[in-house]
Length: 86
Image (cartoon, rainbow, N blue to C red):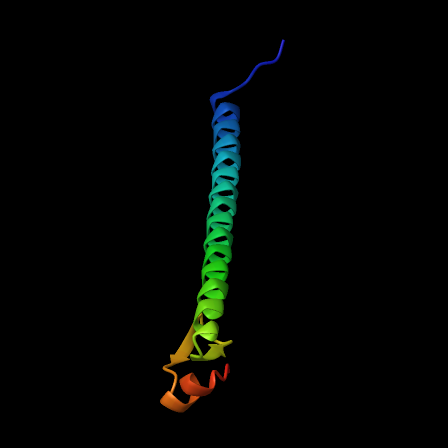
């Protein structure tokens, strides 16, 4: 039969608490990563739809790679009359 001292039980408790805390932290970070990826995919899909709609109406669109947005220029009267798509 094993005999454990209070010190052994305290060490075991500390070890289990550290492991549970580490697992919870990793799990929380994984969930946050999946949420960010889902939001990014949703934004990209909406941006592609907006791009298609605006391009068809002859708006000028400039993608900004370093930032999560695009610049939209109203079509000029000449561009709209010619039906030129930029």
